[in-house]
Image (cartoon, rainbow, N blue to C red; front, top):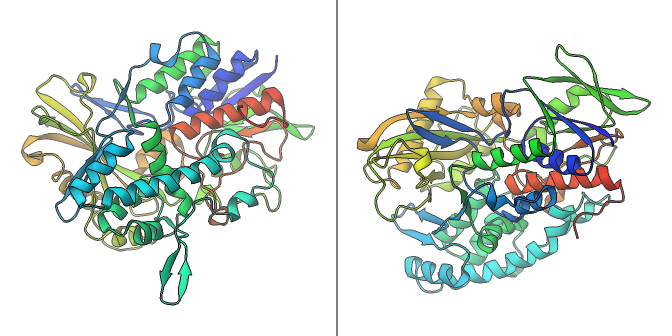
Amino acid sequence: MARIAVIGAGMGAMAAAARLAVAGHRVVVYERTETYGGAVRRFERDGFGFDTGPGLLTLPAVYRDLFVKTGKAPLEDRVELVQVDPSSRHVFADGGEVSLPNATRAGVVAALDEALGAGAGERWGDFLVRAREAWDRTRRPLLEEPLWPNWQVLAEKEPYPAVPHKRLLRTRRAATLAEVGAWELRDERLAALLNSHALAHGLDPRTAPASAAVLPYMEHAFGTWYVRGGIRELARAVYERCLERRVEFVFGAEVTRIVEKDGRAAGVEPAGGPVAEADHVVADVHPARLRALTEYPLDGEGEVRADPGAAASARFTVLLALRGAPEPGAAHRTVVHPADPEREWDFLAAPGGAEPPMPTVTVLRPDDPALRPDDGHESAVLSAVVPARAAWDDERTVARYTDLLLQAAGRAIPGLRERLLWHEVRAPGAAEEETGARAGAVPAPALAAGQGRFLHPANSTRLPGLYRVGGWSHPGGGLPHAGMSGALVAGLIVEGPRFRGSQ
C-alpha cells in the first residue's frame, strides 16, 4: 500500500483519488478552500440556486466508468441524469433561430433545413460525418491514453478531413475552425453555430485547428445531459464515493511545498502544518502554482508545448433570480449570437483598452425545482467567454459587460427586465479565488494539430513520483476530460509507466 498525497479537490483529483483508494492505496487530499469540486460550485440566495461552473455534461460515460470501477452503486443511483432536449437553441443576429434536437442527426438536419433553408441541414450533416472521422482518429490518444512520448505526431498532423476549397488558381483545405465554417458550411448562421463550440471553451475560431470539429461532434454523438439539482450534485456524488473508499480530505490546507528526497517527490508541506510524507504526489493545480511548489524542472527540453498557464480566456457569469415561471417550451440552453463575431474574437485576442463588444452569450434555464424557491420563480445563468487579462477590477468594465449579457439574454428570455428580481455578477476574479487559476483562466480540451499549441502537459513529470491531473494537464479542460485525467493518473501509478490507457 502506497501513501499518496493529492493537492486540490477538483473533479480530476477526486476521480484519481477514488480509483487509487480502490487499488489499495492510502490517499489524503489537501484542499486550500473549504470545499470540494474545483470550478464545480453552487451559489444560493433567497431560495434560488445556481451552478457557477459547468452547467451541462457531455460524455457521461466517463463518470459512469468511474463509479463502476470504484464501487457497486452505479452513477445513476447517486444522481439523476436528464438528457436535455432540445440540446440547444440558437438565436442569430438576423432574428432567426433554430432549436437542435439532442443526439439525432436526422432531427438536426430537418431542423436546420426548416429554419435556415434547404441544404443547410445537409451541409451540417456532412460536416458531422467528417467530424466523426476526426473523433475516431484522435479519441484514444487525446482522451484514453497518456500523452504519447512522440506527441509531435499529434501536433503536426491534422485529423479533420477537410474538403478541398478552390480559390482563384489555388486549392486549399481548411486549417482552422473558422475556415471550416466559411468554406464548408457556407452560411454565416451555420458558421456561428460551429464557432460557438470553440468560444464556449475559450478558443478563437481563427486559430483553433480544424480538429476542434470534435467539440460539436461530442455533443451530437453522446448527447447533452443535465444533473438534477445542478452539476454540483455530480461533484457531491464523486466526493461521497471518495469518502466511501476511505479517501481522507483536509480542507483549508494550502500546500506550500512539494517535498523531494533522493530525486523524487516524497510528500507535501501544508501551510502551518508538518510535512506529510508520501510515495506519490498528485497535483490538480494551475501550472504557475505547481512550478512554485518545487524547484525541480518538471519538463525536459522539447517536452513543453504552449504554456497553459498563459491561457487568455475566462468566464464572465451573471446569475438571475426571476419572478414568474418560464414560458412553455423554454429551452434549457440558448446561445445568443452577436452581429459582429470578429469584434468579439479581436477583443479576446487583444483586449487592451478596447470597448467590450457584444459577446456570444449562453443562457441556461434549468427547469429544476431544486434551484428555485417555488414554481412561481425561475433561476437562470448567463455566461460569456472573456479575456482573463482585461480590467475586471474596474467597476465600469464589469457594469458594461453585465449590461451586454443582459441585453443578449433579453433576446432569449421574454420579459426579462420586468421579471428580474436581482442579479449576481461573477467576474473572473471569483473563479481565481475558488480554483487558484491565474485571473480565473479556464483550460480548453486538448486538440490535435496546431503545432502542439492545443496539447497539455503530460500527466507524468520529470520529477519521479509527481503527477499532474485535472484541466491543466492532459487531456485538458472540461468535465469529461477531467474525469479521464483521473483515470490516466491512477493507471500510471498503479500499473507504472507502461500503462497505455483503458482498453
